[in-house]
Image (cartoon, each protein chain N blue to C red):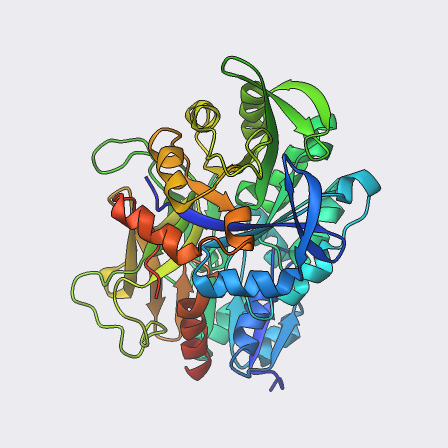
Length: 254
Length: 214
């Protein structure tokens, strides 16, 4: 087992950091650069930026936001939202992103995953999954912030995505997202045990202790945290303390 | 001589902006170069890289950069390879077939094990923050790690690593699933880090700063 990564997730709409519930009802939180810098200083192991309307409107403000972030943030940055081509990915990498996360375009054109992996390497490619539970131990992959179905079974789609070259999975539970009810560790475990690449669990973190079942039962390699951090209900450092107390190995920081 | 303090070799891969910002953080002037002549004139060179070894060597060859890099290193100019850039400095790689490297450092590149030291299965790539250790009783004085305490954590993302490195060239190791992995290797003016100093927070910045002072 590698070290558990504690990741701050910033959902972006236009120039703003936003937060929703079940990925909807988006509320403006503030300027992303301010929050990103705060999380970097708290010791976030990585940052994830997701443009939540990019694929709906076919535009992407993220390149500018990321370019600004690289001035004072020196941890890995993953960027997703509206990436449709190798050129889109290249623009973001040139702007300072280390990895790109793809969802919508990959569901309609899975070959995009192999094109991206071949060009930039699998370590650069995150397959983003928006999972909605549709039965007992059964989840469907959604797109457009959990609004549109794809008909794809999450486990089958993740396995296919990894075969095509995805080097990491960002797994968002739409049912739990923004609810503060804790991670859906059944979903995390099913995905995590089906593949050999790392899984980032996202959606539902309500308190620092919620990482425990995500790791112990869910076998997550990383957790993405938004609401808990944005509303200042806990810091990255407090989450790291819980991880240490549980005996998880985490980055030595500070 | 070039005006910039550091020249980053740009051969079309990955995120160069973060390396540039990391070096600029301490006031260094930085340029991106891809011409043989610019390599010849460089004061210090960073060879970055993500992706596949074979493709990277092919591109460096097409840009006619391999010989200038070798000559520059022989003249004593400081060279820092980062991640794939470190691997390229070695003799050869077994990533998707056999490939020759630039050959400035002795060793070869092989896949990291997906089995831990207790036979547990490991995720590959190795992604995340891992601590740096001193192999045997080596000292970090005079190396790019001079300002660090042993155990400082840095950010790795890789599926391959340096092997068959002479013990005198091993500056720092890390462990993944109990297996030892070369984290920093070097000989005289040539150094390579398997991890990304430009993505390793304040620790990484200290490493880049020390490279600037070499």
